[in-house]
Amino acid sequence: MGNRVFNPVNKASLESPERYKILPPFKTLKVMCLKEDDIMIDIGCGTGYFTLPASEITGPSGKVIGVDISEDMLDEVRGKINGKGHNIELKLADNIALPVKDSQGTFALLANVLHEADDMMAMLAEANRVLKPGGRLAIIEWEKSEMPVGPPVEHRLHHDEIMRMVMETGFTMAKISPAGAYHIACSALKRK
Image 1 (cartoon, rainbow, N blue to C red):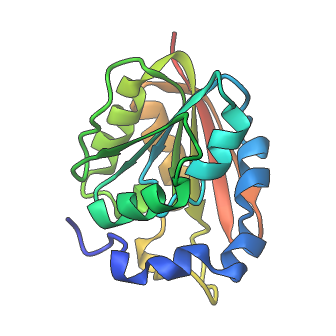
Image 2: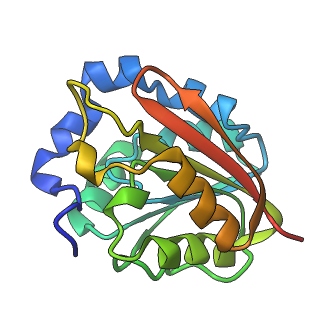
């Protein structure tokens, strides 16, 4: 793992009231066009910040596959599910390879995860692999500028860099938009 990877010891910060203010998960997923019946793959699901709201949005006929490299993080999500979230499946992964079948998802989310990957292009290629043709990719990353929260600016990705990598890994219709005061969002489609 690279030195950019989030340390699970700090997992409480992922559930802070400040984070809910600057990046409200339910609203963010709706803006990124997650919908009922989607099969969402939450790549780097962490404590389930987006996984649990996605379970609610996708409903009983949808599914959420939460993938993380930390068993501790997956245990945190399991504790929150506690009999609820019957459409959630959790999987342990390494830093790049996803334990998900080819063309399984209709929506893949990388929220504050891409900048942590040892090989960002390989991570995006994996996101492409697990999406069905026409599937939607949603990337949320910290804006590349100095601010009082988030990772060091040198770990952040410029939106042009994100767009280039997305297009080079088999996606189309990519666009960048603001996602609150501190984040940018990239949405794209897997080529059919």
